[in-house]
Image: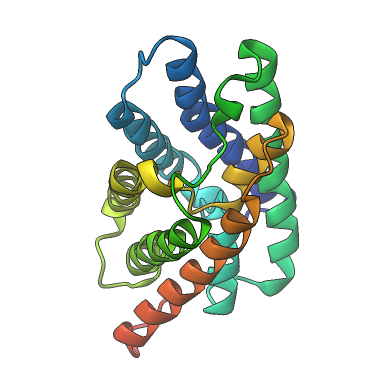
Length: 222
């Protein structure tokens, strides 16, 4: 039986909520508890929650939880364009709810895990494009190519998120996800450089999806 759009939107909202609550929550708790969670722990939190969510909800909504991923799938014709805006709204709604709960629980600590450039805006802009390219390249490979090992998709994608958070986090915050950056920024009031995380990830994700489709050639599975 096909999954209805309301069910898929609920899954996307829940997934985005869990992503922000666990990932950004790790940043908030670390800041509030004198570094109780290391940088490696924060990176692992983001990677593990994505891995878990793909296993839990991938068969319901496709497990996007990221407006950049939804857009890239639509551009590469792996997703219905008419469902892009509803997915975006569900993802942002879930992320906002998580950021609001974090603020209610812990206060406005560490700007609720907002992503901010450590150096210049241009450095973080380019890095976010590259990180999003890598992520979407992997997602497209394991989620749309029948030759890939489907059961390992969650591991591959979660590991990619964790890896990129490890090396990219200290520079740009390794967002790769406009909803993940927008929600804590709005709830905390930390809007500095937000444009980077709204513009760069979609560019990188679209390039990543199209690049893998080019490599795949005719081996297409909707």
